[in-house]
Image (cartoon, rainbow, N blue to C red; front, side, top):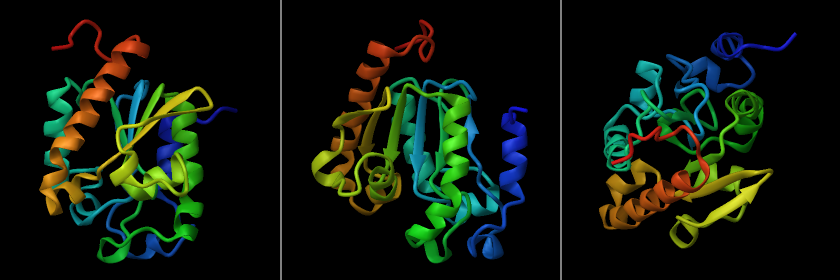
Length: 195
């Protein structure tokens, strides 16, 4: 029997596969449209995400939402957002490889259910896992890679942009490149509502 999105979410909410489950407040499964053509993937929940159970809700999330709105994207309307790991690593450190390995099955099944045409990796950890283990965000951000029929791009993590605001113009150019790719290959992301 095929697993539904809600069944997968429930399984993930009860996960105890790695030590991150012992320190979390909430599992941060993902949020957005379940048939989204565009999915954003970050590395893992931070403190605000852990407290609220939703990805990208702190200052970084507010910045991401501004970038999304500039190209007529919204987690409530036409995209999906999740992370490599669903539980917060202590002190917001990078997830360890074994933690990613424990959690990657959930992400893989999310992608099988959603079947995106485009994946945007937010930050080095996601880009190295999804695109190329040697991915360099400062050099390769905004470049497109096709893997198994899915177009992927890595860009700056919103938290990194808060620490290094001089990279914001490059990140905005990446969003414009995303908008062009959506118009080129996606059928229902904009549905005639593009700006």
